[in-house]
Amino acid sequence: DAGVIQSPRHEVTEMGQEVTLRCKPISGHNSLFWYRQTMMRGLELLIYFNNNVPIDDSGMPEDRFSAKMPNASFSTLKIQPSEPRDSAVYFCASSGTGFIEAFFGQGTRLTVV
Amino acid sequence: GEDVEQSLFLSVREGDSSVINCTYTDSSSTYLYWYKQEPGAGLQLLTYIFSNMDMKQDQRLTVLLNKKDKHLSLRIADTQTGDSAIYFCAETSNQAGTALIFGKGTTLSVSS
Image (tube, rainbow over the protein chains, first blue to last red):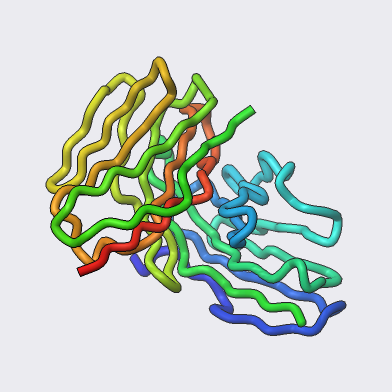
């Protein structure tokens, strides 16, 4: 298996633009997590899904952020409109039944100018 | 609520032992983890310990868990320059679909 795949790896966008981050979890995993990493706040859990259903989105910073998981093999995190303070590395992770280990993607480095 | 605290930096010489400490608040935590992040990369699981264990050893890594004090530590024996990275402590409960809660990470710097 190729592991958790995130795209794009890097994204530079202008303030006010819409940004969509994509994630393909490991096949067979039923939990998917979106995290954001910044120097100031470390790794923050934004939202996670179990069997494609959002379980906890209390970490989503504000209404500009939304996440979907239309099927077991794909999830998106959308920011609209983007702001400079959204600049961070966004990680997607997935885990299987029993949840011993969460496997992380390589991350998407987002820069909003 | 859940909270995980770590010291931010640790600097050691090559060949010395490194000890990275972590405290957590969720007493229902079932698993406690150590993840490693190298520059520009995602997080990789180093090791984990089940909450009914006191110690786990895996080659150069030793994890100690003091459940009473909610204290977790990671000891790296014979630290190498390749061990330089950010180390994250994380906890989770055994509830279905529960997410990992991470500390802010400890940056380990190993000098030769």
